[in-house]
Image 1 (cartoon, rainbow, N blue to C red):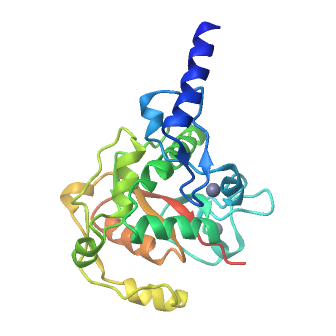
Image 2: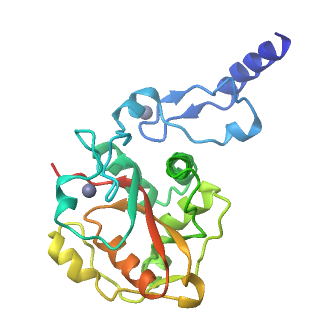
Length: 254
Ligand SMILES: [Zn+2]
Ligand SMILES: [Zn+2]
């Protein structure tokens, strides 16, 4: 009773002294009075209104490409006639207007604090994958989709690496496993075929890092899957035995 009262009091005090603002709209949000610690002070958050505009992907979803399914099943229509090199995809969010805005800010406005908001969502999805597999076929290591060195210098960080680092999975992150050797033009408005051609031979993998390993490959957004597929091909050619994809958001064709 006394502890509850103290927590409540501290929560009110914190909301007064250090008010939280929603990362999306800037509205004030409340500190969580059940987790009222100094850690929670720096924890980024979104308000209820913005939260409801995010579309979290829950079951049923396609086990191959991670797309949400309108029916109970294992595969979506487009995966019936498509062969991806990766073994599975899980995405936290649908890439809609709201998630796009958040991820664009995260990537282009240097607001790396967003990683601390997104990474726990990705961590929970990674745990649910392992739970579904009953801890069979666990991963040996994490690899992230690399930026070309020129883009890395311009941005100052790799968003996929920030997400992987903040997830806190107890797995090594193989920073040298995958390299982008070709600077590709932005794929934003390209057709799926053009994306595939554009990304070919853009990566190399270090066999000494990945040979014989089951990998979790992380990126921020999956659009057609061309980039992630190409990374997987290169990683498997270098000896990786399994590549599962985890992304923050996934574009859905309607
Ligand atoms: Zn908001
Ligand atoms: Zn699918």
